[in-house]
Amino acid sequence: MNQGVNRLIRICFFVPFFFDLGAESRPFTFPKDHSFHSGYGVEWCYFVGILRSSEGKSYGYELSFFKGIFGKETEVFPVHFAVSDLENKNHKTAQTIERTLGGMAGYDKNGIFSGDFRLEIKGKSAFHIVAKPKNASGLSLDLTLNADPSKILLHGERGKSLKSRNNPNYYSYYYSIPRLSTKGELKVEGKKISITEGESWMDHEWSSPLGSTIKAELSDRNNAWDWICILLEDGSELTVFNFRESRNSASESFGTFRSKNGTVIRLEKEISFLHDSSFWKSARTGKKYPLYWNLRTRSSSQEAELDLRIEPFFEDQEFDSRPTTGFSYWEGAVKISGTKTGKTVRGNGYLELKGNRD
Image (cartoon, rainbow, N blue to C red; front, side, top):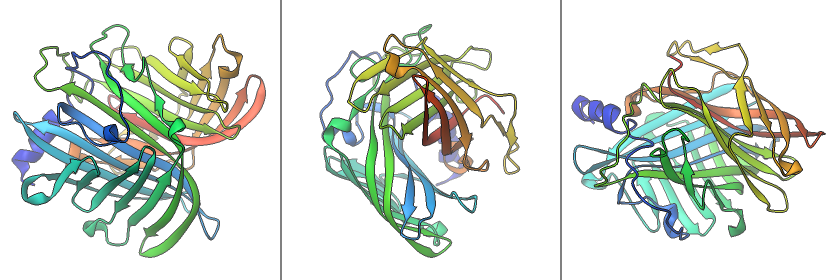
């Protein structure tokens, strides 16, 4: 893609991530809503997870499909793909950005594709994801993912997820599917790896309805978020994020907890999601990231009282996406330890850090 288009992507794709919504609550329909939505300007659907090979080795992965708009109506489709060898502390990435021109990207009720990357929708909570980038021939992924439809988790108010109490124009439509049973094959540095078990987390958000007159002034340099999904060994699940409008804004925190028996608890001011004073500095981009976190929640429901420590499996899990979306971020596998209702609990998850800590 030429430099002019790439520059527009950097300006237009991530600038409006949580803005220009101007819409009311809407019902969700699955599997239809797993695909992209033509009436919205910004959208992503991504998968992260920790997998186990037939040889007993552990790997983390990310496969993220994005949709953005530049100009008045031209859709663009970046994809980010990463595999982390958790034992050897090795992180490999690949990425692309395509348009529908020439049939290089697109979406319909059956799935999403962009270049060498594909998401096939097989049912209400069943997927086949494929990543075979030609520009990283020794790196690939081919996985099948399945869960019971009851695992679909709507965030916020029936899927309308507020990002800021100070400015309610910041919101998106947002759901997840935790604990997708995952099997298939990876290829890392040319070696085929049979994946016999694993759990994935699917996250899907869309915002910015086309034609809306409600806009908030954002830029990719000013807003930021810290996000985590957590799968605890006792069967409960949690996602939490901090959102900041600008470099000088205090974080506003939101979260969703689901117990093993299916009880869902929304969390807002009950959350403390803070990093410690240490930062890891990327030799690749020069950017600093806080990778060690403490997460505490308090709730009227005792089962959602958590005191957790979050640490990366290893530090260098940065994704340098400057060629496709104009900036870098950290997204990687993390280990969880701590207490839940006073009892020891452990787990794992994925942590994402974007923006305003350059």
